[in-house]
Image 1: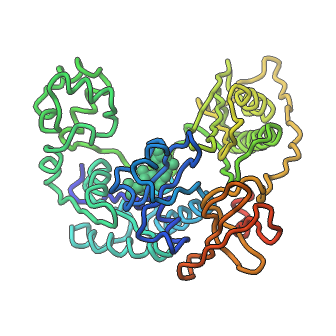
Image 2: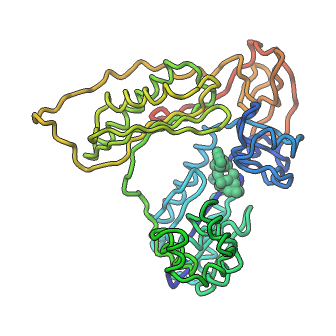
Image 3: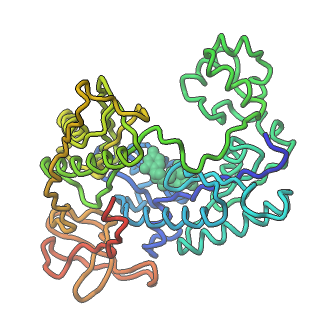
Length: 441
Ligand code: DCP
Ligand code: MG
């Protein structure tokens, strides 16, 4: 714990849904749910208007529809989320060299190296207010909630206290009184299982937890966990902001705006990703034993599978073979939105071949044809389209041979709705111009 509130946590509000409302003016101020829209879909996120009806992340879309039937239910547009995320992270890195992204929409910043005249509460508060304004500028209108505190733990708790569009500074010395009335699940690492064990011991709040001795905590939840809890219950957290994490794994993934269904295409993409992972490993003199794949299905369920070798590898062919093998065990018939390959269990040496030979196992890079951006049969709600006469819009709904489009963009007012035959030649999917960065991903 530091003497100053110099740790900042920033988290965009209702991220995917906010991007949709920005780009679809008719949905601003309305309930919006982003996720899998099919019968087995899962909610990725909901706008705050939809949260009033009890719609939450990870809830089934079926449940969300019954709680808020008038919401707009949209599938994701990952290119737009990536673009917004990159803009925010670039901004954050321009204000401090110590930025640790936690996910697409969330990061820690250490203000000790942000060049501020001092780290007193008024100074860091003004800095955070200005930063929130600049986040809105670079994202063309998204809002972020920010927390400031003397540790990562406190900064993260603080950013959640006044969501959305909030700023909370926890002055040094007030951490314990802030935490005491909160439920133990506020502590990082306390998931449902640990919370249940604590509950059975009569421990509900952080105040309850503070009263428990170290020995008893270790008895309740184990040595490693118990020690951590003991300190976090007292707001003691010295974790540093780690800008480029010591690589524990190397991975590459790609998200797709249309569902992939062709198995050979998926294998080709995995093979190409394996090549990129292997190249990065070799570049850094690393190798790893565990090869994993990540697959997000069209309904937003995300699956991971991994396989561990006897000795570390950095070979494209080995990684690709294992990755393709892992895919064969998964049912991807409903379509795939994201594919990724990773290698973990890294060692900074490569096990020498017994005979001292380096076998060049380089696998021919496969001919991969990117998924077509237009698939007539999959006009997914929310996707961007362009009509030869009407211009740009988005799919409001489709079915029974008809697709309904609302013609509007982020820069236009709310626009008109028109319906077309599903195979209308004047209608096509719209994608933003591809940047080099995306081509690489
Ligand atoms: N996400 C997802 N599946 C989940 C949780 C989140 O796909 N189970 C995605 C959608 C979110 C984004 O990650 O928009 C960021 O996650 P957050 O937990 O920060 O949630 P939001 O930004 O949507 O809302 P909040 O305002 O609570 O931060
Ligand atoms: Mg968020």
